[in-house]
Image (cartoon, rainbow, N blue to C red; front, top):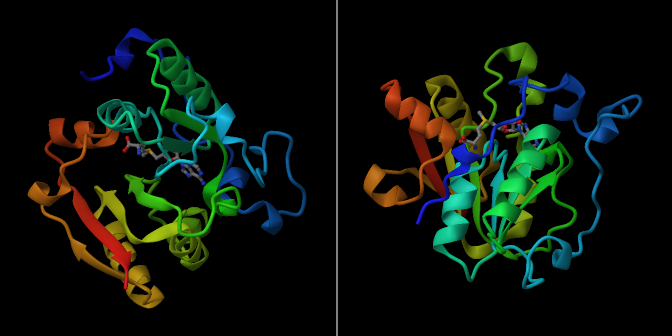
Length: 223
Ligand SMILES: C[S@@+](CC[C@H](N)C(=O)[O-])C[C@H]1O[C@@H](n2cnc3c(N)ncnc32)[C@H](O)[C@@H]1O
């Protein structure tokens, strides 16, 4: 049964992007502003999941979290962690999780520009990087989540047999993903067919489907 999050009104005046600084790693800023998401170093999983176990999957930039809700609902025995930088959405999604009683899903207010210090090495089976903020302009390159530092963190936390799922609706960004994965060298990757993907749809993917916008998908894993 899918979660009907439409029952829960979204925060008013939800902005597409929040302040530019939150997309930068805190250690690259001259001063950390008050509105910067907490710099988490460790987490008590009892506060995130009913069974107190660590997550087995991470949804980076989960947004309105349709994918997270549906995937967690389908696989109740596994814990799913969403990470999102926009605080109003985190509060909203946390309320849906509580009200719909999804004990194995949790959403963190955090900027992944700071890596995943609260996640153990070789512990994650699936990482989702689905329709991240594109920042297509060259001058905004430093705001993109996907860079070599981020890939190093993904490599550290991913299990040997784990998978990374990457999707975008912009061909330019898709090419960037291919280039950076090639440069990184430690992951094998291939373009994924719809048949192979077999995952619940995300909010952004649904939008693309309705508007007939092409999407590009990659599945990666450790070499
Ligand atoms: C285009 S939305 C896609 C949301 C969802 N994955 C989907 O497919 O519907 C990208 C999301 O990534 C979040 N995001 C961007 N940079 C982030 C960062 N550094 N840390 C955490 N979340 C981030 C944005 O706030 C936004 O909600």
